[in-house]
Image 1 (cartoon, rainbow, N blue to C red):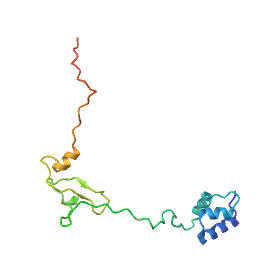
Image 2: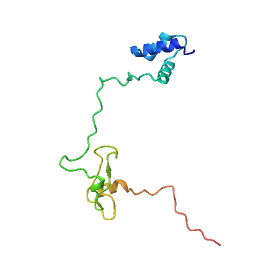
Image 3: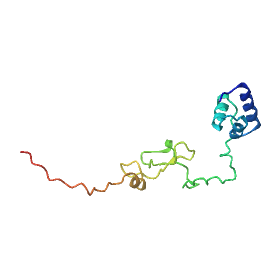
Image 4: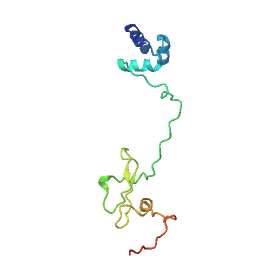
Length: 138
């Protein structure tokens, strides 16, 4: 299948008319596939159209995640932190509501008691590892 000037003009016209890539492929015929139409349209720089998959506006959007914070309490930012405050990050650094815990930190630790318990977990002893008696070297 070769892209002649005639086929390219027909592709541009059908694309501007709003036909789908599958419909254009059927119109062009002779072994032209949907993917060939999409590829050629991309290479020609034809304006992109919204995806029919994403256009389903009837579906409800996912409910936004609720952030556990008090409305009257101001969020603790990086500039607000002191050495006595819990530095546990809450949220994603790119989000507008990203902040730090800010509670009283445990002595010598960067986190409050609750976040220390989450961050520093003791590893249980392994059952399969037996203590070997010390070897004597002769």
